[in-house]
Image 1 (cartoon, rainbow, N blue to C red):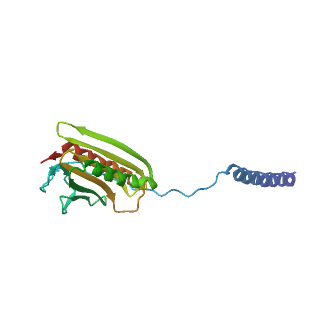
Image 2: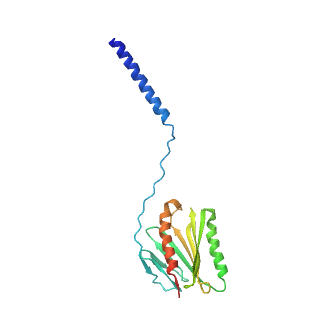
Image 3: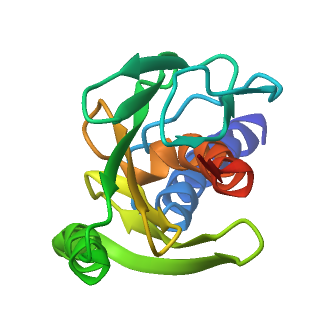
Length: 194
Protein backbone atom coordinates (compact mmCIF):
# COMPACT_ATOMS: atom_id res chain seq x y z
CA UNK A 1 0.00 0.00 0.00
CA UNK A 2 2.85 2.33 0.83
CA UNK A 3 4.53 1.65 -2.53
CA UNK A 4 1.29 2.27 -4.35
CA UNK A 5 0.82 5.60 -2.50
CA UNK A 6 4.42 6.59 -3.20
CA UNK A 7 4.05 5.71 -6.89
CA UNK A 8 0.80 7.73 -7.19
CA UNK A 9 2.39 10.65 -5.35
CA UNK A 10 5.33 10.63 -7.81
CA UNK A 11 3.05 10.57 -10.84
CA UNK A 12 0.90 13.34 -9.35
CA UNK A 13 4.03 15.46 -8.70
CA UNK A 14 5.27 14.98 -12.25
CA UNK A 15 1.86 15.81 -13.77
CA UNK A 16 1.55 18.88 -11.53
CA UNK A 17 5.02 20.09 -12.56
CA UNK A 18 4.31 19.58 -16.27
CA UNK A 19 0.92 21.30 -16.05
CA UNK A 20 2.49 24.22 -14.12
CA UNK A 21 5.17 24.66 -16.80
CA UNK A 22 2.57 24.45 -19.60
CA UNK A 23 0.38 26.97 -17.78
CA UNK A 24 3.29 29.41 -17.50
CA UNK A 25 4.24 28.98 -21.15
CA UNK A 26 0.69 29.46 -22.39
CA UNK A 27 -0.08 32.43 -20.12
CA UNK A 28 3.06 34.36 -21.16
CA UNK A 29 2.01 35.05 -24.73
CA UNK A 30 2.93 38.78 -24.80
CA UNK A 31 5.94 39.74 -26.87
CA UNK A 32 8.84 41.07 -24.87
CA UNK A 33 9.81 44.55 -26.05
CA UNK A 34 12.96 46.46 -25.19
CA UNK A 35 12.46 49.39 -22.84
CA UNK A 36 12.48 52.81 -24.50
CA UNK A 37 15.34 55.21 -23.86
CA UNK A 38 14.81 57.30 -20.76
CA UNK A 39 15.29 61.06 -20.77
CA UNK A 40 16.58 63.16 -17.92
CA UNK A 41 14.14 65.02 -15.76
CA UNK A 42 15.48 68.55 -15.94
CA UNK A 43 15.00 71.24 -13.36
CA UNK A 44 15.28 74.81 -14.54
CA UNK A 45 16.31 77.80 -12.43
CA UNK A 46 13.73 80.34 -11.33
CA UNK A 47 13.36 83.11 -13.87
CA UNK A 48 14.73 86.56 -13.26
CA UNK A 49 14.99 89.15 -16.04
CA UNK A 50 17.20 92.17 -16.75
CA UNK A 51 17.21 94.86 -19.42
CA UNK A 52 19.34 94.31 -22.51
CA UNK A 53 22.52 96.31 -21.84
CA UNK A 54 23.77 96.53 -25.44
CA UNK A 55 22.69 99.68 -27.30
CA UNK A 56 20.37 98.83 -30.17
CA UNK A 57 17.44 100.49 -31.99
CA UNK A 58 15.35 98.30 -29.69
CA UNK A 59 15.44 97.08 -26.09
CA UNK A 60 13.78 94.26 -24.17
CA UNK A 61 14.23 92.17 -21.04
CA UNK A 62 16.27 88.98 -21.15
CA UNK A 63 16.80 86.13 -18.74
CA UNK A 64 19.66 86.89 -16.32
CA UNK A 65 21.48 83.57 -16.71
CA UNK A 66 21.85 83.92 -20.49
CA UNK A 67 24.93 85.11 -22.36
CA UNK A 68 24.61 87.89 -24.93
CA UNK A 69 26.85 87.85 -27.97
CA UNK A 70 27.06 91.22 -29.71
CA UNK A 71 27.03 90.84 -33.50
CA UNK A 72 27.30 93.37 -36.32
CA UNK A 73 24.32 95.15 -37.96
CA UNK A 74 22.47 95.39 -34.60
CA UNK A 75 22.11 91.60 -34.52
CA UNK A 76 22.69 89.55 -31.39
CA UNK A 77 22.64 86.03 -30.04
CA UNK A 78 21.05 85.15 -26.68
CA UNK A 79 22.77 81.96 -25.56
CA UNK A 80 21.50 79.42 -23.03
CA UNK A 81 24.77 77.60 -22.23
CA UNK A 82 23.25 74.95 -19.94
CA UNK A 83 20.53 74.11 -22.47
CA UNK A 84 22.88 74.25 -25.47
CA UNK A 85 20.48 76.64 -27.19
CA UNK A 86 20.33 80.17 -28.51
CA UNK A 87 17.86 82.73 -29.77
CA UNK A 88 19.36 84.39 -32.84
CA UNK A 89 18.07 87.95 -33.33
CA UNK A 90 18.44 89.72 -36.67
CA UNK A 91 17.52 93.38 -37.11
CA UNK A 92 16.70 95.14 -40.35
CA UNK A 93 15.62 98.75 -40.84
CA UNK A 94 12.48 99.07 -42.96
CA UNK A 95 13.05 100.91 -46.23
CA UNK A 96 9.67 100.59 -47.94
CA UNK A 97 10.20 96.81 -47.88
CA UNK A 98 8.07 95.57 -44.96
CA UNK A 99 6.15 93.13 -47.15
CA UNK A 100 9.40 91.58 -48.44
CA UNK A 101 10.82 91.27 -44.91
CA UNK A 102 7.70 89.50 -43.64
CA UNK A 103 7.60 87.21 -46.70
CA UNK A 104 11.29 86.34 -46.24
CA UNK A 105 10.70 85.61 -42.55
CA UNK A 106 7.73 83.36 -43.27
CA UNK A 107 9.64 81.51 -46.02
CA UNK A 108 12.27 80.59 -43.43
CA UNK A 109 9.53 79.25 -41.14
CA UNK A 110 7.92 77.11 -43.81
CA UNK A 111 11.26 75.63 -44.92
CA UNK A 112 10.83 73.45 -41.82
CA UNK A 113 7.65 71.78 -43.12
CA UNK A 114 9.71 68.82 -44.36
CA UNK A 115 10.58 67.79 -40.77
CA UNK A 116 7.81 69.57 -38.87
CA UNK A 117 4.75 67.76 -37.60
CA UNK A 118 2.85 71.00 -37.09
CA UNK A 119 3.43 74.76 -37.31
CA UNK A 120 1.36 76.74 -34.80
CA UNK A 121 1.11 80.52 -35.41
CA UNK A 122 0.44 83.18 -32.76
CA UNK A 123 0.04 86.87 -33.56
CA UNK A 124 1.12 89.84 -31.42
CA UNK A 125 -0.57 93.23 -31.51
CA UNK A 126 0.22 96.04 -29.11
CA UNK A 127 -0.84 99.27 -30.83
CA UNK A 128 0.11 101.39 -27.83
CA UNK A 129 3.79 100.29 -27.98
CA UNK A 130 3.73 99.79 -31.79
CA UNK A 131 4.69 96.13 -31.49
CA UNK A 132 3.22 93.87 -34.15
CA UNK A 133 4.35 90.40 -35.11
CA UNK A 134 3.94 86.66 -35.25
CA UNK A 135 5.46 83.67 -33.53
CA UNK A 136 5.55 80.18 -35.05
CA UNK A 137 5.96 77.14 -32.84
CA UNK A 138 7.31 74.24 -34.92
CA UNK A 139 6.69 70.75 -33.53
CA UNK A 140 8.65 67.71 -34.65
CA UNK A 141 12.34 67.17 -35.35
CA UNK A 142 12.92 70.48 -37.12
CA UNK A 143 16.13 72.52 -36.89
CA UNK A 144 14.38 75.50 -35.27
CA UNK A 145 11.43 75.06 -32.90
CA UNK A 146 10.33 78.68 -32.52
CA UNK A 147 10.63 81.51 -35.01
CA UNK A 148 9.17 84.98 -34.72
CA UNK A 149 9.21 88.43 -36.26
CA UNK A 150 8.28 91.77 -34.73
CA UNK A 151 7.93 95.20 -36.30
CA UNK A 152 6.69 98.70 -35.62
CA UNK A 153 5.47 98.63 -39.28
CA UNK A 154 7.35 101.80 -40.26
CA UNK A 155 11.05 101.73 -39.26
CA UNK A 156 12.16 98.53 -37.51
CA UNK A 157 11.97 94.79 -38.16
CA UNK A 158 13.31 92.00 -35.91
CA UNK A 159 13.42 88.31 -36.72
CA UNK A 160 14.26 85.68 -34.10
CA UNK A 161 14.91 81.94 -34.23
CA UNK A 162 15.43 79.37 -31.49
CA UNK A 163 18.15 76.79 -32.19
CA UNK A 164 19.52 73.87 -30.17
CA UNK A 165 23.09 72.69 -30.67
CA UNK A 166 22.13 69.03 -30.74
CA UNK A 167 20.53 66.53 -33.09
CA UNK A 168 16.82 67.38 -33.21
CA UNK A 169 14.76 65.07 -31.01
CA UNK A 170 11.61 66.99 -30.22
CA UNK A 171 10.39 64.74 -27.40
CA UNK A 172 13.59 65.14 -25.41
CA UNK A 173 13.96 68.91 -25.85
CA UNK A 174 10.27 69.80 -25.45
CA UNK A 175 10.70 70.95 -21.80
CA UNK A 176 13.56 73.24 -22.86
CA UNK A 177 11.51 74.61 -25.77
CA UNK A 178 8.66 75.43 -23.36
CA UNK A 179 11.11 77.06 -20.93
CA UNK A 180 12.63 79.30 -23.63
CA UNK A 181 9.22 80.03 -25.21
CA UNK A 182 8.28 81.88 -22.00
CA UNK A 183 11.40 84.05 -22.44
CA UNK A 184 10.50 84.80 -26.07
CA UNK A 185 6.99 85.85 -25.02
CA UNK A 186 8.54 88.02 -22.28
CA UNK A 187 10.92 89.54 -24.85
CA UNK A 188 7.96 90.52 -27.06
CA UNK A 189 5.96 91.91 -24.12
CA UNK A 190 8.86 94.08 -22.95
CA UNK A 191 10.07 95.21 -26.39
CA UNK A 192 10.55 98.97 -26.84
CA UNK A 193 11.64 100.77 -30.00
CA UNK A 194 14.15 103.62 -29.68
